[in-house]
Length: 376
Image (cartoon, rainbow, N blue to C red; front, side):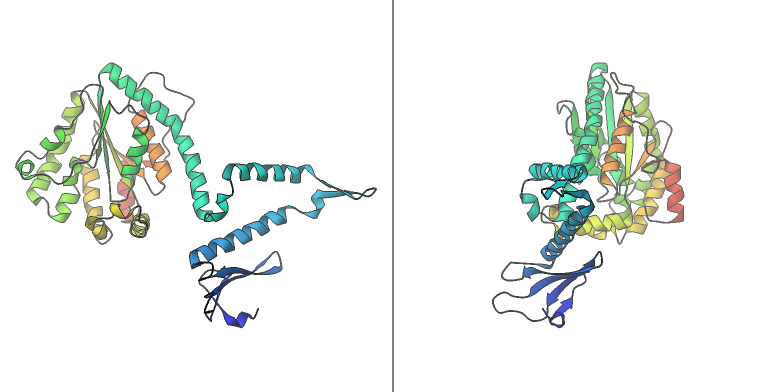
């Protein structure tokens, strides 16, 4: 194999042939050094094997991974009986082989055809789901407590586009009794609603006794989205900002349990999630015209977010800021915030209900961070 016939790709260790074979297409080759040994391996052809750069990278990673496993099985772990030349594996290697066999039994043979990053991501999601289950059990207890006490709860989910609100709502309600909760995500107001009191269309969806209502975006649309896109006047914006604190205080005074969650995503992470939506056919439906402008209008949204948190945070209805770049941790902290809002019966005190200070942060800390930079 003459390496002058190949050119480097932008992925370390991966080469592709300069010439194209009329039947097989271009050839992908792995060439790298590992533990002072040089390895060269033909990965396949673009036409013959339907090989793309992405799948070639996956094959290269699997080949490297196999070398790592081989390195772990060292000669010092093997003993040979001089009388009969019988080879005996030490306990460490025997355990490794048994573990390997067990994992292969769990994964089956199909794992070989899955991109290693996708496989790792899938396994991590299993761990994450198991960690959430203990808190989802507590949410069921909370729901039963509210029903017995005839109490009402409203949970507001706010945040920029792609901040993780919808995913958090799905995890929170996953095992709840659907007879006693509702998810409300209101669209554009009708002509009739435009001529009503602004908060009226939200009040229509408020919970009755023993019920939880989760708002996927709420009346705080008027604090951020509407003024930026010109859906309300400056006067309407100011009236809302002046009145909403008293409105929420009245709700709490009348026995409503009101929880306000703001999912705070960084600019870089929002962009990464938008790019994924654009390129993933399963997520393309999520991408909207508003999303296309979110990055360009980041500064304007930051200004409105700052004003909203500063002016609408109150003792009776405080904001809970959840850093949401890590979706799993954000969901976990949102659950803790909800569970800590009520002293319900049968709480499992062996669980950790203490908020993580790096994820579940105070309004003051968020505002301080925003004064330093507009990353959030």
